[in-house]
Image (cartoon, rainbow, N blue to C red; front, side, top):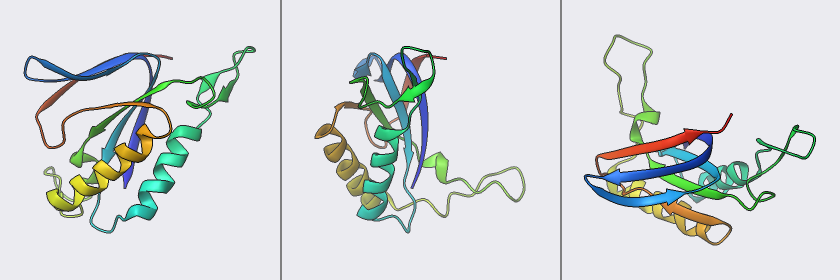
Length: 136
């Protein structure tokens, strides 16, 4: 399981013209699920994502987590994070989990995240446009 986080002041995700998810201050997580992933990786990545100290404290030191600032999380499925780019110019996605397995783990991740913080999502498997205002 691979995650790419971005600290944002706001973010949204659209499918076509429809806004399917948005957050204010918090993190965008692009989530890639690989064949070997299980619920163990779900718990581990969620705990890390919510606990990374990437927000500034009163002295402007990065000491606060998403939970500390009561921030929001936007989770967007992104199978391209499983890309193998070691050979040639066309990435291989053979390590990505099959869609049915990936969707189940994605849904598990989102459900667990929603129990811990304000969480919005994209639409699994859809062609999404993600807009964000980078914070930092």
